[in-house]
Length: 79
Length: 471
Image (tube, rainbow over all chains, first blue to last red):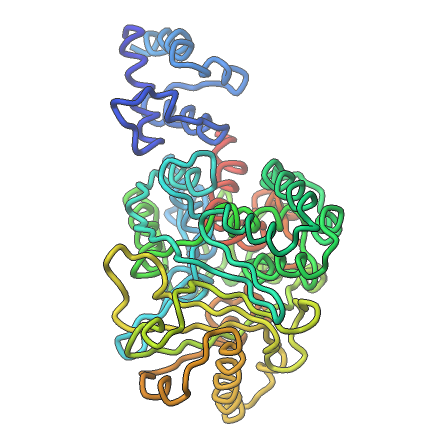
């Protein structure tokens, strides 16, 4: 698992939450993720990949880069 | 574990119960919805007579915003339930108005119209109006721990003119207030946004389109559903729900129970029953609605393109339980034909008129008198509503009339189980959904997010807050 692959998995999750992601518009321009959406990202990570994110670490999911930084080791530990 | 154990049981397959079910099933919970009626939808259902389908409850879906508008309840709901906007097939309203004897305010899905109406007709209230709108826009109306405050009191700090205050309260109360005369300010804000800042829409085929989407999502997510089988008793032991006794006599158990049937209705279902709590918070407001079906759309004889008309002709708008069977002084007119269906349309013309009613008076009538009262009030209510519509000859309407139907507080009680036929439920809402039992939560009408979008968000919030967030 590379950071790039990890980013891709997070984008997959976000695209399913925001059902109409347009490929030609920057993600952050079409998203307005609120606390409900964050809960969803966390729960989809658990559902799809068996990865647990404790509430204290939610801040680590603030941006795609920080997601990759924080989650990649977790994915690697599972592989 | 035996087969009849669930991670979560939901009581009632209305909008809120279905939404909660979708969330829980999507995240792998073993969940079952029990519904006493044979049709889903609860207070927002539909029925057929002689092959013709009628909506109950839904005049218009509130909270409509065009695609691309962010941070509103509709968008939140679609995301949480993984629904594509197109699936709801929403068509926006044409225009609506609040019509009082001496003054009228038009509003559409564009807030600028109402804003201009208020500025033109109440120039002396310009500053107060601006500050009220600003407060509404920034108020956290979905905080689960908010303290209840009076809407009349807060609005009174901004506006002085009783006529303007009543004009604004009329639609807001008719579309959601379980309280007489006043409402909780948070609820006022929810409805003000839902009606005035956002707007009305409807799928061409009515509420069943929305229900179909929800049922299909729930099924796909793996949720179970049992119709014609309600929960008769919630058996408590040591501060928890120990078991649920079903209408068919069997028993199931669950880690969590979400009840959408209403606060007093839930308290009465508890074993031992919590009668006193139920009585202290039972709603008293019910409604009658008449539906007339015509050969042509109402615009054909000059009734125009109003979608909804909220009317009142008493000196002060008096939102209270009717003293008589019906209070014809105020009400709501709905023309389901007058949405922008983009070239399509309903095959027949529909007129719906809704007024406040008195449950006890209707419930006390013997069958022949009940039928006679329905027939008489059908005429009365239509006559009353026509005061606020362009004049049309009686003969024109009579020639065009195909059929009529009507529901009363008795009908509401029978099909939804709501005590007193109280459509908007208990006067005091339980925002955090908590009850005296640690694994029993409320969602829907008595949790207090209003309208059908609110109902769905209520189910979502309670499922998230009490079950999913806890892992």
